[in-house]
Length: 442
Image (cartoon, rainbow, N blue to C red):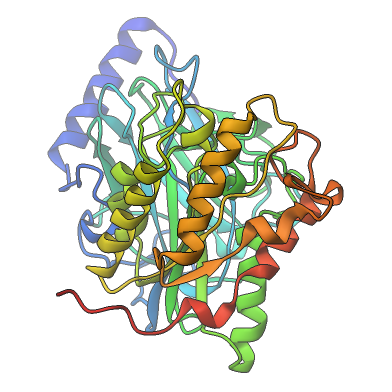
């Protein structure tokens, strides 16, 4: 698409775009997830980019997700006006239909999306797409959607075969700025931006690498028969996989997803997908403008609003210890964890909780903080906080100094695991612990 020149002409065209967008404005949830969809979720695009076709049958599950963290630095003035963002995400399971969720949680104005597409990546590590899989996305049947500041919206379903363990490209074009771009940093994945409207560029030639951020996109759901439910990994940087190899999908939730795909197919484990809702620096109890809302505050959005959630794995508390100017109260952390469990149980969701991993040698470590960690772990192991416990502490600690990470599991900063450490974490979770009855509410 050729971009117009001339201030007056550009202003007139953009004014017309916004006016037309408002006229077809669909009902958009104020950041309440896929349960509040814009339009009918059954509207679908067929193999051709514009032809309608009925959606498939099966179960909706989360194939990928990332929690919105804040406004991308340096985007307050122009956002991504006049550019196309192409996000690259990796699926934990496949399906025969797909839908996406776009967020404008941290924007200061309405986000007008006039073009959006989804495609399976060509598989060469670039921005190229498999042309046979390119689908235009619609929202309530319209190709344009306006997402209010602080809100989010989900697309209609499109019929497309999305493989498991594959990269998917979601491209979004907005002609005008919405202010700060809602993003997830530390994606450990190269994403792309192009000047102009390039959502249907299957070659990827118009795109340039634009850092390891996911922009606007917060979820990819699929419909199919590969999974019966979703597992949410809720945590901080250790769940986010901040020190894992970029582009290699070696976070512990990735390892868990691979195990579930393999064992679920043979009947030795539940048939679940996995989505990663980790935020680097995130705390259980306290909000942080640079590290997202607390887990207690974002639990509804990032866990309860994901489709068909059967279980959540919680790994939180380290940052409450490290970032507290005063010594953290171990009982407050345990109480916060219990609150998450109660909220999950109220929705029939099983909770597997982890012990807090060691961090001696990290710049924030002190004897007093180590004592808080031990008290929290003691409660997790003995006080039936969770339905099941995965002992990440025992799995990663140095047998010669249990206060620190085992050297081969240490990324080098004494806090975050290496690829080998993340693999050990993903292998430690008992797959059958993810299914089973949830205690009834009294």
